[in-house]
Image 1 (tube, helix red, strand yellow):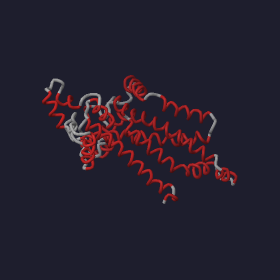
Image 2: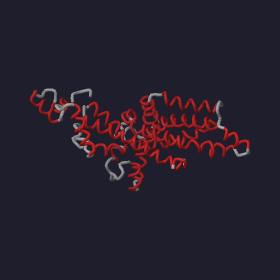
Image 3: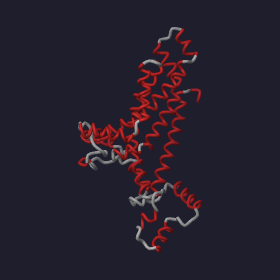
Image 4: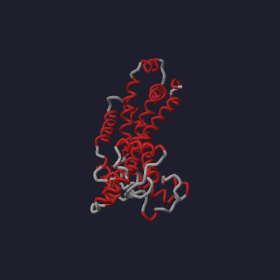
Length: 305
């Protein structure tokens, strides 16, 4: 932690007696292994403790901020899949041509360009200069706390409430950060799709299908692409999990009140309960998405049954 969590509570001018009392109240006087097992006991019961920064249970804070990250990451993943998968397939089919080179450059830029730089440039151009999108945050201040929270995702909640003005305003705010995350997801998914497809297209069964006179469309999408679906499920699941926990810089730049921003702010405030709670949730998301991907294997590959 960057600062002493006890000092963040009692202040730097507190007496030694007050400091020691707070130190014991936090359980920091116990051996580290004892602290660890006490923490595990509470986590199993769904208790991550109280946030020192907000004064609320960490579980309640996570319930409040996680839907914002989920909304952002879901849109980014959809963009990545819808564009990245066809782009990867096309690059593999047109291997060595200018189309393949363009697709590889697009993926390389997505990996290489710093997220914070692209985000700032995007805000400068599309918000500051052109005024095409909304600024930082999820909504303009005027529209905040108007619609009742149902899912915590403003696009869905505004649609359920039938308030299309708020829906439009929320979309104008989310489009740029979601596109930014979508581009990162696209770069990863297209690169992996191209690699998987190249392996399949060089297989003997593809050559046999072509010799038999099967159409190129059927060869590519029915046979070659059909055999990479299982691999793509894992790639997409990991990409989605990565966006859920790895959108910290994006959330900070766009003042997006998600779990990444929550963990970062808590870390700088020495709020150990919030940092640990957020970290456990992120780890749980990875585990659940991997289990979900394993379950989908049975749907895409009958042999897995």
